[in-house]
Length: 287
Image: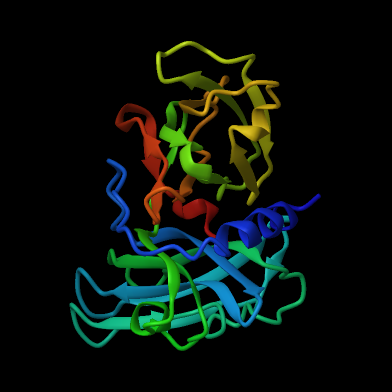
């Protein structure tokens, strides 16, 4: 089953909660870079749509034309073969907005709800920033999630520019008050990676055996926490460590989306990576 189908089933229940806004906390990693990975979702939910908006900023200077190419959860390229260029080339500090529609992913063959994109400044190699917003909205115009007073389930994060070659993890999850947790893991490189994920309770006691998950080249995987570990009585709160057992090189990154029903908040944050064994996206892997 594709990850988008699992995501769709969980997201519908999540979105109907009707939550409010909480800004995300950043991972340690430096995300401003001339290549970045972006999460993309666009799922109709009743009269609204759970979708993503992007704000690109030319942080280093002019001549910043960002080419965006996307993949679905079945490892297939979707959208225009050449990608879509986002123009922030006039001056340093210039801003450009984009949506799944302007990136020509909505309605594209092979797209059914969830994907990831590679944003690449092919012209000059100048670094850029991306604000990535997820939310439930009726306003599908660029930056409409934040501009529309009717938008709900809104949280922001950043595009990611670094991948891990070994240690990373999810610092905390909880199911208290019916909170739901979705971990999105992406391998943007051309080489498959095998991940080992270990679940712990908040006392630091390992829960069950490590979960082995293969991320194919350009692959996307979706985990629900703690259900994906298959335990009869999983801890209601805990943490997850992620390692690449054979350490073949940089190969994964990702985000955690958590909805706290008891406080009416959403957190959308990058998965933390160990600085000693992470590396920026390799230009040789750019599609």
